[in-house]
Amino acid sequence: MLRSERLLLYTPLIALDVMAPAAAGSDAEAQHWLGSRADELVQHEDTRELFLSMRADDDLSRFEARDRFKMMRKLEKHSDGFVQLTAVHAADGRYAGATSVGLESGEIGGWLAPGYRRQGLGVELFRAAVQLGHRHLGLKVVRAGAEPTNGASRGALTAAGFTPASGPTRFTLGDGREVDACWYQHRQEATSRCRGGS
Image (cartoon, rainbow, N blue to C red; front, side, top):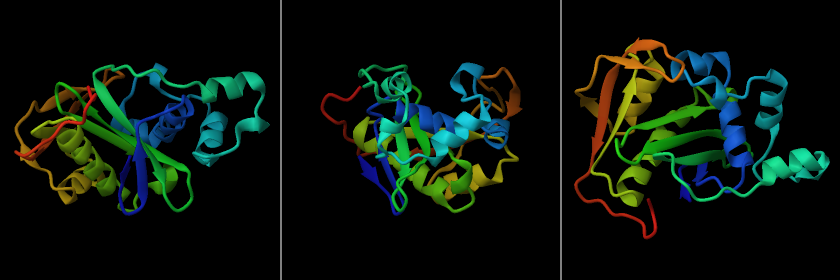
């Protein structure tokens, strides 16, 4: 578990720890920048709102058994080539977003739920990704791409200690859209790797 000034970040333990952060980035504003695949999104607005109203420690007994089982299903430890951290807002306990680091590429990503944007939390999210990459995964360099017009993301990366880096000027998002890209990196020579981490 990592802790920033206002966020608690941890490896997802149950399905809800993945479903709620997915809802946090499924709205039109987030998808303008993220361009996720359709199967990664929480499509229905009512379902998104439900997840975004929940606290990470909520009692799920109010849900039907079938839905409760889906949300409480323990996640098996496996890798799709990246490690994700679920972000919970420390003050209210609600799901605030997520960040991830690619195991091979060192590329990070992250997003925040609508109610937590424009508050400087992106800096804390990216700093957590840096910690995850350097201190837990043993990566000397973590990288991030952003559209040149995405001032919020670029500002958060800079404030988190990233510096401009070389990279492809065009990037294809998960939904197939090709966008302009600028790149940043965070380098740290002294790294470590958690036992059992992969």
